[in-house]
Length: 262
Image (cartoon, rainbow, N blue to C red; front, side, top):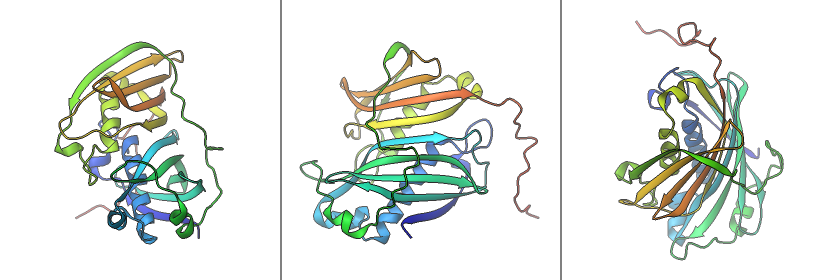
């Protein structure tokens, strides 16, 4: 089988603040974990690459979300596969399901880079060890294009701390998305649901760096851009598309299929 499948559960740390449902950012972290586990089955996990002084990096993420995300404690099935390999690039496509229904799907662009030079390595070994499943859930892999900003919506600063750092000793991808999310006022997050998320990571940042995240409106009233800068240099660019939440949904009425204790 060309796909790697892993199941998870929505735990308290992965819930949103209002509806007991999975946070979109947590869905992306499940994807990264599943990718790491998949590479481990082929002896190409991060710790396998340390011997050759190489590391995996993700350059782009694209994900579309369905109308309703999983509820607390529900089981999630993540399917991820290598969908395209070029001389330097590795693309994965993926689907996340709950109760047999897809609630998120998308693709990601990965590189194996030399730890010292930071330049991409050739993908010969990847091509030898992984089979390609030519199933593209969002269609052809396209170049990321950030929508044109029209006006600044919000801006925040953040100094990287130990909680932001991953095993590669640079800032975790999750932290950049957290910054973008933090710029949205509480009332916005109560009434809006994320429809799609597109991210491009341009440059590493490290412990102690001070990041500025600027969120901008665009010509489309449902689309925002989020630019994270370090010393004026864009290190991460994000585009988000939002929709109105269904006010009829209530956590009080949700039929949670979970074994009651006691």
